[in-house]
Image (cartoon, rainbow, N blue to C red; front, side):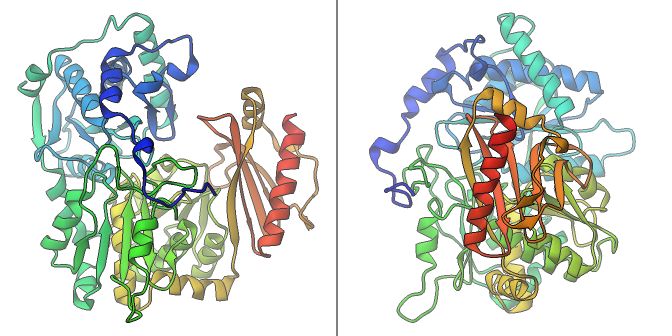
Length: 553
């Protein structure tokens, strides 16, 4: 733990916004450097203008590539576009609008000139496509956000008509075409001045906030929250949910306080994350230190709120703080949410499965078994949950990184992207209906299923070693035991859908680990869990690192 983690940022920690914006327009990427080329990870293209990895040429090329991809796919409906509060998001959205308008694409921007959470954009795409007359061209969208990443970063994501993150067949084609356009000096990119783009007949407006907030009663029991008088403290953490929370409280008459409505592109009010960087990670105790402190019991032994919540910059992640438990581990809350929802959503398909990523806690497996529901374990990436959420066959999908979504009360789709606002409000519904906090309910689950200990560590790896790890087969692992237990599974493909996990997962009766190469750093990540305590977890981690190092050496 770094010495200043959890303390308020100092002036030397803050990004120079003027330099950041100047670099966006003035710096041209060196395409001979792989780090400066367009590359789509699990959540779009990300980078910083100060590192020549997120600059105007990137966005112009990516947007033109998206236009051409839409054409190849026959997608001719409106394109919804929104941005978060990162400093690079507004200029990137403007660059995109210049290209979209020049290509004659019908674009819908926020009617309030505000910020758009990722789930609100997903919801808008799905609502439009569901309500459109048969044969009407389908809509898709772009959200400009690097999620919880530091203030100096930018991000650009494409969501096709299914409303969720684009699959690799789309992002691979878009990235390849964008890099080709960059190599050709942007020849082939159509563009008009911003004022012309904003006034174009093809550029319209859409009220993302009203569309999302007014539809919340279809997915949550807001009556229970209101009637119980649950006191909610919502911290937008300087992100795109800032205006949404106030409207949610007012329109639905909830006892809700927006804890911190400040929007600052430097995020000077933030407490530093574990590595002394400003990062809006609502699952991090260090980044959430201010809200955790606010929820500490006062002299009268009561907390300020019954439930307090945080969201990252595009509101696709959630952090849940309770008076008795503090900040909940994301895995713990997912387990509680799953147990509650599958017991309290009578309108859902009775055969709907529970979806989780393979690096999420195994207590979810045990909870699903206790519910009599099939568990579907998929690789990392929310895109894998899209088909189930659309069909209702997988009414819930969740990731260990505090991202999840679930279906409406009637079993129909709500969003196909992560929804941090939804999961935050669910914590209040759970409190209202059960009379217990989510952390108290988690204690009940551990009494029934055991208490896992979970952690993630990073280990150094060269680019060649990372490549080898991503191509492992089960036969490459010759070990038969892990931390004193027989290995029961060696996985390089997700058991839920047979898709490659880009790494390795090893399972025993009471423990597991998964190793995956980082897409942005020269490390690989080891996720590990044990139901036999912290000492056993440490042994699992040590043996996991030795095992992986042995097979990728």
